[in-house]
Length: 140
Image 1: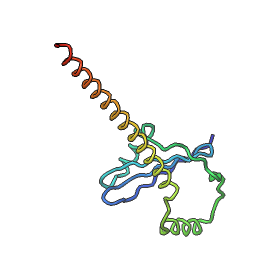
Image 2 (image 1 turned 180 degrees about the vertical axis):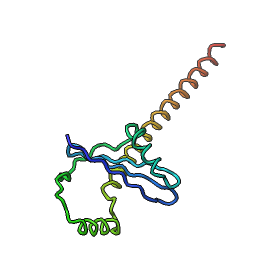
Image 3 (image 1 turned 90 degrees about the vertical axis):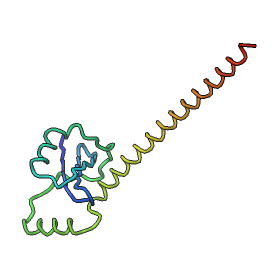
Image 4 (image 1 turned 60 degrees about the vertical axis):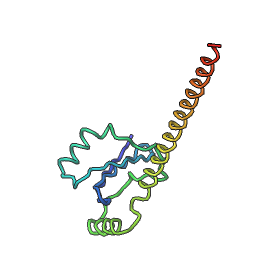
C-alpha cells in the first residue's frame, strides 16, 4: 500500500488555508483546513501530528493515473516545472472539485435533515391540533 500526502498552505482572502491531498491505492481524497492568520511551521507540524486523523476528508475519487512512479529529474528542470505549476492558474482544480463535491454532499445532508425536522414539526402540530379538538368535544 503506497500513499502520498501533500499539504499546501495558501492565502484565500481573508484566511490562510491548508489543502491536504491524499493519494492511496489509486484513490484521491482531499480536505480543506482553515488556519486563520498565517500559520507558523510549528502550527503546521502540530496540525499534521495531532489533528490529521480527525480531519474530514472527502469521499475517495478514483485516480486515473499512478503518480508514484517518478524518476529522478534534473534539479533545474524540476525547479522550472515547480515555477510553471505555481504560476499557472487552476493548479488546484482536482482538489477544488473534490472539496466542491464534499460541500455539495454536506448541503444535501443538511437539506434532508431539515426536511425531516420540518415534517416532524408538522406532524407534532397536527397531533396537538387533533388533541385540542378532542379536548373541546369531551366536555359536551
